[in-house]
Amino acid sequence: MSAHNVYPSSSSQSPGPAARPDSKQALITVVTPLWNESDTISALAAALRKLFQDTSVKWEWLAVNDGSSDDTAARVRKEMRGMEGARLVCLTRNFGQQAAYRAGLDHASGDAVVFLDADLQDPPEFIPEMIARWREGARLVVGRRRSRPERGVRGLLLRGFHVIFGRLTNNVMPRDSGTFGLMDRVVVDELKRLPERNLFLPALRCWLGYRQATVWYDRHERAGTPKQTYAKLFNYAWNGITSFSEIPLRFISWLGLFLCFFGTLCAMLVLVQRIGQWFGLWTERMVMGFATQTVGIFLLGGVQLLCLGIVGEYMARIFREIKGRPHYLVEEIIEEKSNPKKI
Image 1 (tube, one colour):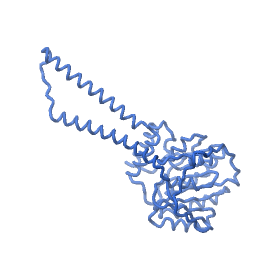
Image 2 (cartoon, one colour):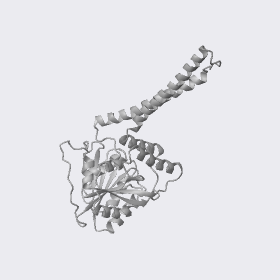
Image 3 (tube, one colour):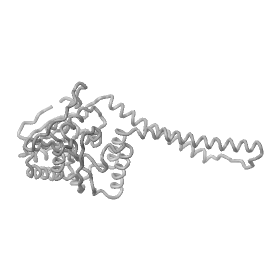
Image 4 (tube, rainbow, N blue to C red):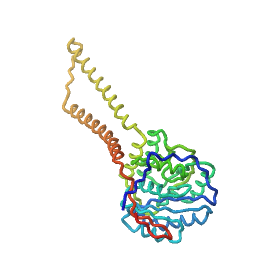
């Protein structure tokens, strides 16, 4: 077993615009990361089979098993039978969804690559429309949600993230969009050239530029049990914000200036009171109590710890980048109608 180093050398050249093959020659790779998705594999495979049968475009399904602890890999191998060109990339452990998508990018051979989650909340039947936008000249086609099934606190947090993320990053990616989308081979190759360890691919692919198009859709209820806890969603959101915005660092400066200004006002007030007492213009004497001092100490201490935490987060990201570890390790690649390839 060996590490799969997923970033090329700095000497590689950026590919120029490539002509799209015609409909009969084009190959579309559908990349699906899987982590304990045993209860959704059958529905996912059925949806992909129907999609493959209803179009003349050549397809391949590239499933990435992100260290599942259930029988996800076995179920995928079973569903792959008879699905020509299907491949299963098994990672050595759970590296996270973004790393699994990166593994899919590195192993995809299609002229265009589609990101599709296994829970089928993003309906595969909109992929042909994405291909149509691609045929019209778009290098990147992003799926945007008109509506989503999440309600209550979860729905409020998800919608709030897109608003905050857009404001902090100058709308680097379309609001209410996620990983669901199609990328031209040129975009895929450019993404593979980026050596970043802290991946946030939905925004990173938009950051590249190129001509973009949008496909609107209504998000469905999830097939199977939700895997994203509130803690994972928060980490995902924080990773995206810190990957594309320095505003949290600037917030420290703004907060420091505000506290300095507030402290200066308080100092001036005390000085005016003291001068007034000297000249007999101020007869009342302000007594600073224990509660006031305690509140001030805790307030300033909390602000300092908050600022240190934000700085520490960015330093940790620098530390991870400097180490240069690979995004993932591949244990096995299984192809339909072929023997497993050991890595």
